[in-house]
Length: 242
Image 1 (cartoon, rainbow, N blue to C red):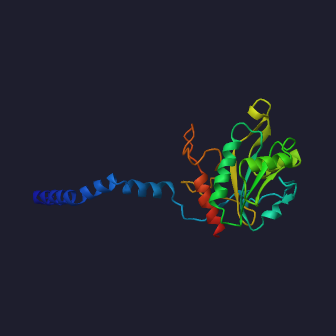
Image 2 (image 1 turned 90 degrees about the vertical axis):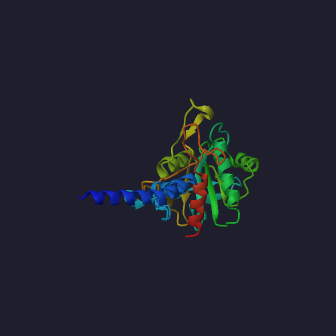
Image 3 (image 1 turned 180 degrees about the horizontal axis):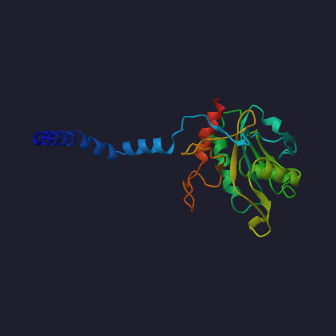
């Protein structure tokens, strides 16, 4: 290439730098480049419909259940037909994660109070202790007001089978842990037709369940895990609008 060609190219590069580099720097300063790049890189499927959780290639549906609630009424999965709801497993005497989980659900309840077709199903993993009377006290203590939020108790084996086999949400009796029972504190999101749904992660895979043990005011826990209550709130609204 002739020498004058190199001079011409250098001149073009210089002009590009003078015109465009300051604009790029300004965008970086106001974080627009960072934010836009992060959104596209970390959430490539943000606008897609929520995933169906599949087992053996088939969408996973909530198994049939029938338990007594805090008002001693028999509640089944059919009572939630046509509703979007959250499922969790807890116990009223839990000294560790349950208070945070319930508080997070109350947060959702209050944010969604104008939606008649939203509900919660909370299953006690200590049903021998958690009678309807104790569940009623728990309801009043946490100001649970949603008429479609049922605190459920019944046969121990049925509840454990629902947790471990029906939802694959771990729950077990363990005398060596605080409170005597252990569980992982996940929330499951159920659509109007009874299917378990979730959003996709940055790689395009379903997250399956939502962390229920980190409060919206905490942002992250001691392990660096981010709260997911607000994304759960957004996903509930998405299902309510389907």
